[in-house]
Length: 395
Image 1: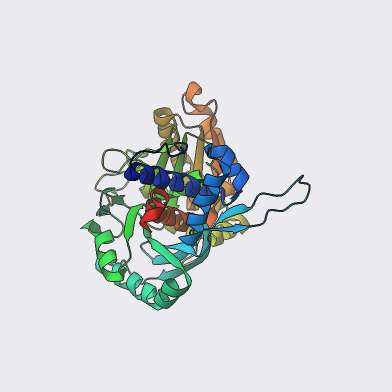
Image 2 (image 1 turned 120 degrees about the vertical axis):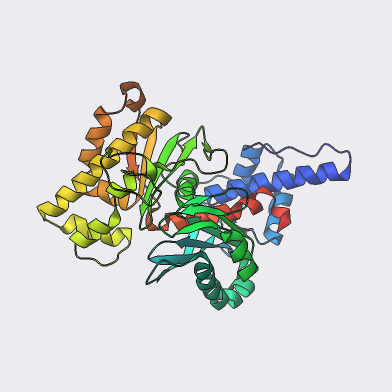
């Protein structure tokens, strides 16, 4: 983040640009920290106290932050007011899967206010998914327009999403090809809509609020009902590729004798590492990652353990390739991949301690996503918040 600067005089539009930039810096610091004092903002930005006071005042007027008294315990002198994200400044977060659509409300600062999973009996077309989401949002409209400062909608899609306009190029498990999802949802709801790959957004959420917060180079791998995707943070920045499609580790070859994949290739990671067999073995028709984890950990069946180990071995092959290629400091596992790791962490740890190149694996560690089942809601909302963080005056 570029540090703020004091206005130096000159033309009004120059001062206005500096003010917008400084508002962006302050709001982003408050959002990512989930709250800091005016004194801390002054120190981090290099701006003087009166400028910080004016910027915070404007953000309060725009209903993006709130101010409160600091805890004065063990402090000398008058405590500095604490600036926090306004919890009523929200984004609608959406995550479509093959068996359900989850729709939630997330406040600035990454607080999940609500998240409801709407099961579907079959894979919905993109238009049907838009209508379902539109109907839910219609039911929330009075609350969103009256009680909240609704910034927009973010969608975490299990597939390739063009970064520039939210066009879903391919979501193979949903059978969506070249679907203008963001455009359709914007027309249906009237809110600004942005869409991105679910794993990319998981990486963004973990980088901002989770396990990867202090790590500049990490790989996030997510497993869900609609397959496996990856997101990469390199030198502190998302690695998106030329059009936003980087990180599709679910389609890494792990078994040259494997079965055909939805993508058209064979032996992909997500054909060997799947949630459905795990659910079947523990007698669940459907479950979120937390429920599946409890069932797997409680099971004493050798058949269940053998399937977990088989999937972990193929996951190890994919991660060996990723570690050798990307040299991350951290691998974060989310969704049912985190569940697999929880059941037998030593299996994967041993594979990654021996299979990648020694130099690449020396500083590597593996962790579960700390945001848990809230992760994709937070990631989708983070995508929606990008515009207001970049220019608070636009809202």
